[in-house]
Length: 165
Image (cartoon, rainbow, N blue to C red; front, side):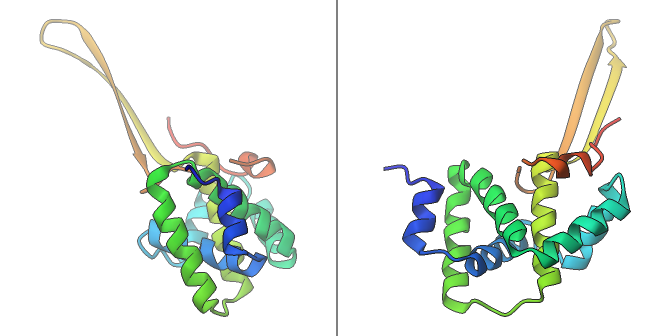
């Protein structure tokens, strides 16, 4: 049986705190323990408008429903990749058992970072080159660098620059 993310949430009896904590833990694992400061720096670098980013971060800090929706959107996407499910399950189990107290700012940054990854689909850099081969023909190559995982969203999609030329 192929369990849906919704079925998993119901089985876990997930509440908003568990979902937010699980996102923080999952992103920590997926980004090789990138700190919230490093995530924030990357968000500011990628933002088209730093003022809008700061405004949205404040909304994330003050509205637990937005935080929860962002986390759910990210997990829903990641759940589609069968190889990510064990990590997601582990993050929820750990969150359920420990439920550490974490500053809301850290959760807001993690949620915003998840939205950034969904928006960019994890792409951090695109290099395109065209070269002439010895036989006179031309060859185009494209190299795409991604986060260690690939990740949606509405207004947030307009906030970040797209990587590439």
